[in-house]
Length: 81
Image 1 (cartoon, rainbow, N blue to C red):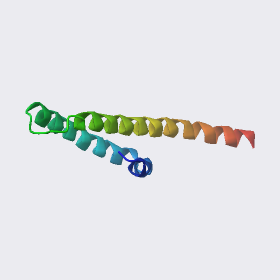
Image 2: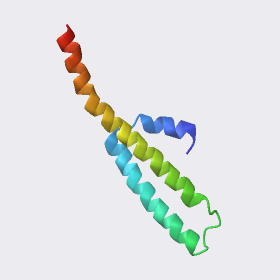
Image 3: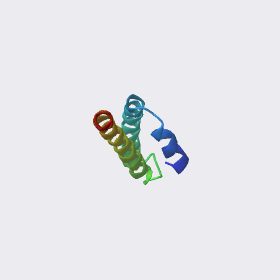
């Protein structure tokens, strides 16, 4: 995954990232099967897809944490005024 693609992923919402995650997991399974059956010559393909999946999972978790923290920050700001 190129840096440009990763930056585009940051702008997506959690639902969009989960859809992309499902498609990447399916792609990883298909790539592993084709590698094991010697149809795919690129043996690093599965590794690269797994890394992309890890990046997507990281973004999803970051967004979940930010959503949990956002209401707490608003309450603190209101109480300080």
